[in-house]
Image (cartoon, rainbow, N blue to C red):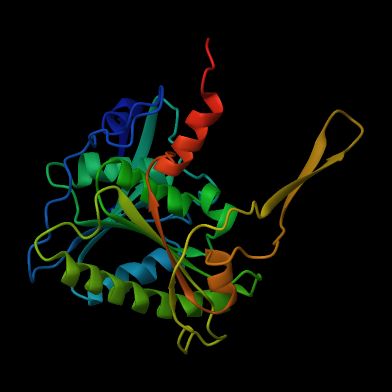
Amino acid sequence: MRRKRVLPLAALLLCAPALAGTAPAAAAPQTAPAPAPASGGPLRILLTNDDGYDAPGIRRAFERLTAAGHDVTIVAPLTNQSGTGTKVTNAPSVTVEHPEPKVWAVDGTPGDSVAFGLAEVFAGRAPDLVVSGTNFGPNVAGLATHSGTVGGAVAALEHGVPAIALSTGGLSVPDPVTTVNAMGPTLDFAVKLIDRLRSRARSGPLLPEGVGLNVNHPLIGADGKGTAAGVSVTFQDPQTVLEPDFTDSGDGTWKTTVKVVLRPAARGGDVEAVSAGRIAVSPMNGDWNTGPADRAVTSALLAGLRP
């Protein structure tokens, strides 16, 4: 039976980082970190996405991860939330539907969904892993920055929960059937990846604290069969990719379109790997801090500067 709940937004934000100001990278997570997964038992997985709770990618992911022996619960947006990034809904309340066992549909963003899942569905004991996807199409370069799929994974990392973002698609725009077919190999790889993480974790967390993985699986055939050319550990290509175009309508309004424009791929980046038919696995964190070298350069630039 479909059930609905209407929760105050504050109930979600209580388990979210403060929105005013920037929290330091070492800030304590707002949700108790996931305990080490029980050896030999099923992993407890919160499954989310940005395409909607009933999209083909998340349903196939639910089936495949469940078949692999994991305890999977979908907590995902009620409607398509592609391109919402890390947005948290600013509204007095959010409606949550429970249309079937193990499925929760949140009328909000992927970030809202993860926040609700951690605060309510997994209250008292965080999941072992959050998996976001598989997304319909790639999340590489600038696409990852704006991706709700990646945003859902980042929301988990902010709470100290290990997270993997999954995407299926090359850099061209194929017919939908091709992408849906290719989700099978994507999820087969995801199961292998989770198995590998678990075998290496021993009694510890699946990933280092604060670190998630953005996984982009290429299209490997119209029938979804075949094998990717390999696996590459990559970084997010710094190119923008998305270019908005504005046309003056002459009546005080502007027509807008957004197109994808690719430039030469950065060596070692996710665009290069996916273009070569390889699976790109990019480590990511849940904040906007750069590394020590960048801070040192900034300190040198600001040396002697006074208010």
